[in-house]
Each structure stands twice: as C-alpha cells, then as structure tokens.
Picture 1 (spheres, rainbow, N blue to C red):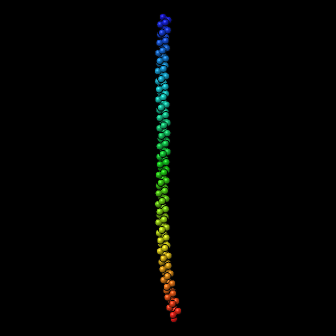
Picture 2 (cartoon, one colour; picture 1 turned 90 degrees about the horizontal axis):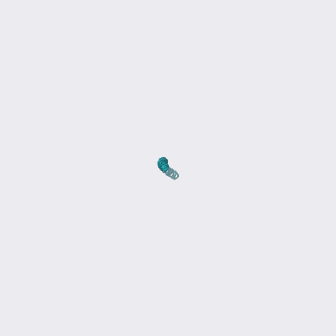
Length: 117
C-alpha cells in the first residue's frame, strides 16, 4: 500500500502542478490581455493628441491664410486709393497749369497791346 499511496500522492501532486500551470498560464494570458488593453488605450490617447495638435495646426494655418488675404486686400485697396489720389492730383495740376498758361497769354497779350500804344 505504501507504493500505491506513493503513486496516489504523486498523481495528486502532478494534477495539482498541472492545475497550477493552468492557473499560471491563465493568469499570464489575462495579464497580457490587460497589458494589450492598456497599450491600446495609451496608443489611442496618443493618436487623439496627435490628431488634436494636427487640427490646431490646420486651424492656425487657416487663420494665417485669412490674415494674409485680408492684408493683401488692404494693400490692393490702399494702392487703388493712392492711384486715384495721384490721378486727381495730376488732373488738378493740369488744370492749374492750363489756367496759368491762359493767364500768362492774356497778360502777355495785354502787355503787347499796352506797348503798342
């Protein structure tokens, strides 16, 4: 019986060891699964942060483009105003020059007429 008892104890120990191995493998599998879930959450958060920063950069670039376009419009308007002002100034100077020439002609003809007498 001692031999049979020994065999029984060995079988019980063997089964207990197999159960321990199964539990350990299950524990390691669960642990790995939890690690994968954690890594997935971290990767997802990282991707979300990257997406948010990319969207911020796009919005910033869009705002800069709008500002550049507004500046360009302002410059074009200013150039048009300057051209209009210059044109008006040239027209005024031309008219003044014409008036001056007419006055000079009339005074020179008056002087000629006075010198003939």
